[in-house]
Length: 285
Image (tube, rainbow, N blue to C red; front, side, top):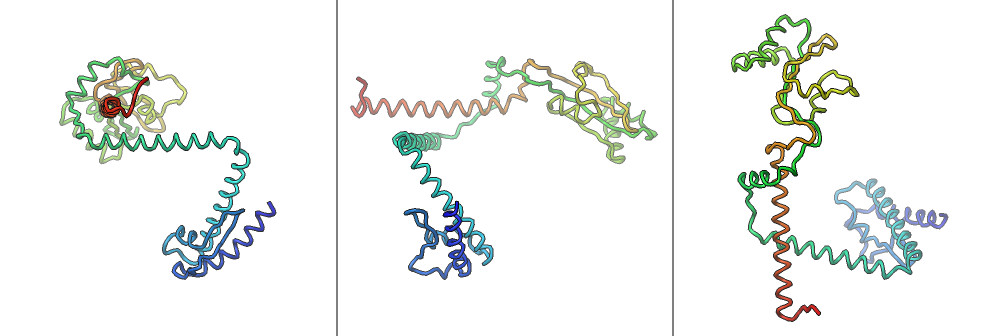
């Protein structure tokens, strides 16, 4: 620990010199700014790592942090080499395996980039969905529905409730206009949302069981804090139900893309193996 402090003191002095000069003023002889054992950090390395246009004081702080990190990195490397010198062959093997996996990954990417772009049509998605419906199951309750919150003192509340429940376009237009004018909360869930997300907009007890609401298609009411919350669930899916196509669509698209990629790579692997075996470059004994 004391030796590290001594190194840091020496480094700080050198950093002050480095930080005071502009980057263009570094000497050509490339003086050393830090050392750990036989490893050296030179002024040019520090200069190349420093962001351009940095202020003088900031350059000193950056240099100090960079050199401190470099020293710690060198010390950790040296300590690791002492502790794990006997397992050097294992490290070499891991490095080689990592290098090989990087090259193979790069080659696979080359195969995919050389392949014509895959076009996935709605017909492809529907065909896959129909053949694999059992794979698409709901894991949590999902709903479609609507929520509106109306102040209890609002005089036309009963009229709004009638329009809320109406299927006529003119009634719905009047209802939505009044919501906008009076800044009433009005949420429409025309796409599937989780039941928990739907309920989070209502003043309900968090730990209460609300599963009975799933089967009710009538308008339901909650009175809370001088406000009436009207809501209705127009459609619901329970755990284990088959996922609708519109929910599964993007999932299926990704499945088909991944399957295409796997097919391309497998086809290329078969090609290079066949060529190697037929030319004698590879042989199975």
